[in-house]
Length: 152
Figure 1 (cartoon, rainbow, N blue to C red):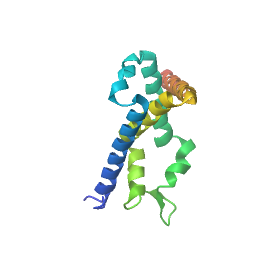
Figure 2 (cartoon, one colour; figure 1 turned 180 degrees about the horizontal axis):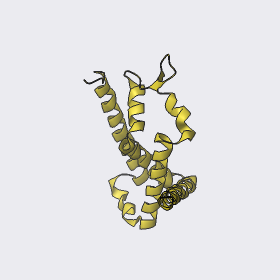
Figure 3 (tube, helix red, strand yellow; figure 1 turned 90 degrees about the horizontal axis):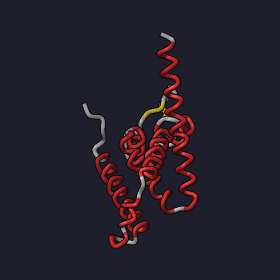
């Protein structure tokens, strides 16, 4: 049985359209149109690595970390037992479903990270901080994995 409300497809389509509009606006503002798009070819592997790590960290921050749990709750409903669940429909349900899907959150996060990296001078610092935090997460997970293997 499908519990998805009938109008949910409309909200999902509106968010997809919104992403495409935002992507187009960012593209045109960063490139001055198709005439000035050659700079993309000059991205180094270091840039791509930084942006990838920062995007990974943004996804974790938005979808899983306790730090932004309160923000995720803004879009959820609470029942009489104090349990949180997705709203029955509407824009809030779409936001929660977007945040639950790491692939979806990854697209929006990548757009945000790339935009601030190229559009704002302080954006590079922000991306570097997120990238270093991502490496720290990898190292923490790796050390926990080694500890679990050693405990056997």
